[in-house]
Length: 406
Image (tube, rainbow, N blue to C red; front, side):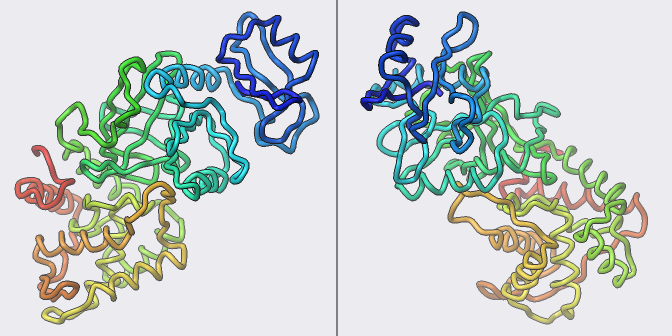
């Protein structure tokens, strides 16, 4: 930690230019105490590492007693030094006793900034976010750049923990994440996130030197620096190919139940209809790959309906709700993304099925079945159908996720 208080309650910030001798004198005369637990802390003011306070040995009941890495301390220091240039009233490590929380930086009145380098239990991060929100504040989580694994220029691996800090762009309504590298002094913005699997995503990664980054208007409120397709269509087709080649090996309950449904329809998971596994808005609300939950929609809610027969959106939604209740389908935890619901993804998928001629909308939430989806008989047929449907979707721009060229 970079802030402590004395026995008289005076706030001591290591950012304000105390000398080593002054700090040692204060420690000897009145001591330093943790703003959160009020236990004694000691100054660490060496010549090589960033000066900081740490709890004396034996204190274990304070969340701040776990210690912070030099990477984290440097990042917090650099971020604060930059923030106060824009917001002179910003505070370093203020403590809010009503919610028992202490953000790394606070921009009054509404923006607590947290620089999170290591994973902590998900319930703790969710509780902290909700604590800020209960105070009418919007937490701004910035992750350590070391957490982001780049697989290609447009493909990244992010953990379920990182997803907990995702925010929604007001430009294209897709999730975005922030990362900071204190060694490079750069802010990274991963925007237009489209999940492919539970951990692999497509996205656009922009970087900004910290000295040029503005907290006045965070970049999730602005368009990306690069106006390019959300992902390479060939990459999505390749993902579908990999699902077809390897999904049958999975033995999780989600896959076991789906395999049974395919067998009842005289097919296998490898040959799921090409109308499944399609990119649709709000699919990020679900952890499973799109071919999984969309296959469930087709097999549970569309195929059993007779051609020419009508059905309501509520029947499809209730099937999904049951799958979630039984933990066959999993919702992604997104504490900072409000006003969205997985039902939005389901409705967008039904709209896509309308475009492909499987169903037809006849009311606000009423549909009529036109035909059955096609179960391919060979891998070549499956891949050919995948290409044809994707090509048509891109050509006609059936939703925001169908962009670019084949």
